[in-house]
Length: 439
Image (tube, rainbow, N blue to C red; front, side, top):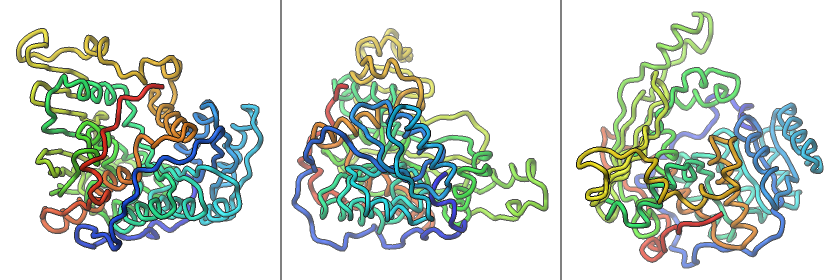
């Protein structure tokens, strides 16, 4: 999947060890960024494997986008993405394919407004920093960083350069996730007291293929925590108003045994396959409990190594009722059809469907995880063109990504609490909640 495949499997940075990820800089006073509006967003895209190519395909259908440059270590991938552009009647983008750091040349030489990276995890921070250093807004696939230093570098660079730096968390725009956010905003569930999110996805085969298998499995060899918290955590963080009235304060985490990958290898690989000789430290199931500054609780679960149907859990519990995903269902005291019995979500959608999912734009979209990928790309471009703050910002990027390194530290310390930094440096107390936006 793009740029980082040229690295050795052990060539990425180790998880950071600074307790709590303390900030080395003094607090900043700048408000959340709203950059100058622009008619057309000129883009460079770094890493056009599976997900990067999907972004190209989607962005060609978003108004006000010009894809100017493509970067990938795989010439064929770059040419494939360029072909999508020319087939759509657009100018062929400039190609940067000279090696794993050719994104630095792209960021320095091209006249761009935004650089998006869909590379392997270890390349997210370098690409984002290069973009901001050269005066470009920056966006990344998830997670943005898995070290405390990386999270702080991104926050400080965004503050210093006054450039947007956002994480493309598509699940924030899922139909069910936006429905429950609207339920919360309308007060239907009462005061939100607890939430649960997860990434439960059987990726055993994916971790051995010629895409993510070239880099993702390597993280299982040396890291043990929640390696991929953002899909489950991002949406419920919005319901909890994280960085907008509350913040993650600390986490405790534990992992179970590592069995799944080895069992899969015994069934699918020969003894001569070098992958069958690997040893893994990542527990198959990681469970983490987060406490917020306002005393609320969040459970986050990670499991990509065991046979199971897909789920992100998506539970939001309020003082008046609860939403639970997979399958989607709602219970609101005094309003549900029967006492102590779940309502099917359909009746609640009729009244509380989020405006983004009522729009004609999204009703016409079926690609990109059912349409939420289109919404995340569309909303970012819309915010840049209008010159308004992005839906999610660099502080959200850091807070949600911080569960990667903080859970690893907690697991290593026998589930001791690990502090999560206040990346906003106090601004979370006065920043308004993410509003119910429209297309």
